[in-house]
Image (cartoon, each protein chain N blue to C red):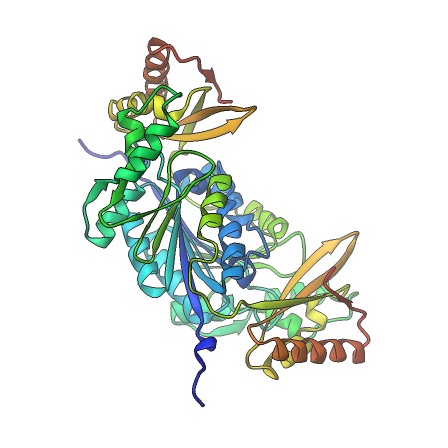
Length: 255
Length: 255
């Protein structure tokens, strides 16, 4: 059997850069945001690494994940201060120099015209790895940066959101991973065998089990995922049948 | 100059295991929770990797981070269902077998005595890499697992919290990283040089700049970090002096 091109799985890596995440001071919001956006593009988030503001650590993570995946995203470290070293790290990882991008400079000059004008620090945000393009930023002045399969985005989540929006539809992906959720007021340990058997009977599906404890009772949501809508429907059907036969009430759509 | 033993920096890695984080379905809460707890133990979180429920990916991340750091923590994948494969992956990473831990078995038998009794699926939660000890779990039955410098914890945040609590004070660490925050209703790009100069004048301090946009105005919090209280105080003093001289109002403690 040949694999149709639509079966190709596209993957992305994400490098989250910032001491503030590793110190616990800031709760990361970009992992979930980037993950959800990628799903819609038909691209699977394969791995995330959170690294400190140390150039060699960023270089290592960028090189590992850009080679293993179709796309790489970074968040954080593209601002105007001394701890913003992502551009330098990515340039080092790619073996290119750092240059001031003329369009980025023009954008920043316009943005800061009525805010005290351009300064050396603000001009840092026009620096890009040589050969890079810009990713529009409609929230604040400084653009994101795209070079090869690497996409450098802001750390502040609402600015990242604007940059993702600008990239929507521009990256080739595959079939989006579809999912259906079935909720059950049953301890997952009581239905573990049912879940395993349903998954094993459908080789293109994965079933995840996510337990919870709510209103004094335990339960779990079972999430069935597949790129194939028919397989997905069949697996959900098998699972619901088996739950019903074993006497477990369940809620399609999840609890 | 010799380095006093109190200057030793202790580090930890964290591997977050779970398709649900990488799909964007679940917002991770364990990174910030583990990071904050480690800070208090005098241990620095050096890197986080989020990997899917695929054994070779878990093995790779566990081996990379346990060798680079004093401690390794994992969250997720120690429940009763087929997608819970962390124990097998860590055993493979360490080159040991998987056994049923008699104490874990006894804990589970007692916990499930009035909940339908022990089953094959529930007994999965008594499996440990050979040679492991248990980490008490006062929230639900299944214990965490400690083997060498590797600590396997639950994925559900409040259960993880209980396991961290059980480990409090048991891991050797160094001097906790102290921090002070100074808030400023000023764009960080206006004070980038002040921040860089203050940091360069204090080699044992790092200054992070965290911009925000609130009530229609931009501002930033500057976080000065050091294990040395005197250096920290001196750096904060230098920074505040320089901000005042340049005419920027600032708020000790942050905004």
